[in-house]
Length: 172
Image (tube, rainbow, N blue to C red; front, top):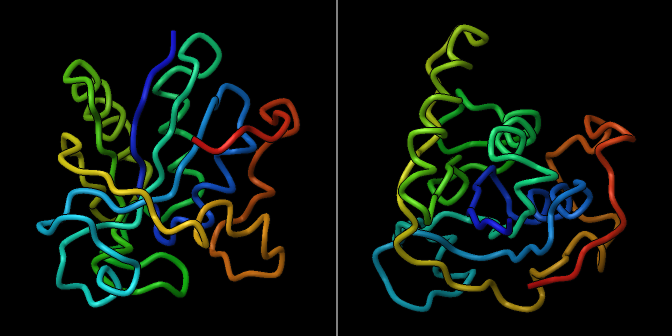
């Protein structure tokens, strides 16, 4: 069954590039989620005044990749205890979050995060909210690290195990 979710883990370039490699991901798209303004641009989001977060929209096959495993992948590539900062990226647009579309997913997300608390010495600060808005990022940001292989990325792609990898997926 195909499901949808939006994840934020710092710069969306790395989040998209990582999840495109995960078996069970059907489509990805970089964009801006849950801000207070309509149809924003990268430049506007970077001011920190719009309230948007850089995020990655995912479609995934729940039979191959259950929600819990999607979240496990996210937690592998982020510091869930860091407020508004991942790697060298600092600002409210780089906060971490899980933005669900199906209300039934909220309980599973909250249970997953609760299960992770004992693994960290600091509080987990990952937002869990219903997806309110999602705007596609400009084309230059879609599949950015594929277009710019030397581009900056805070994500360590080596945490993805060989058996979890898939062939590249299409952009949504």
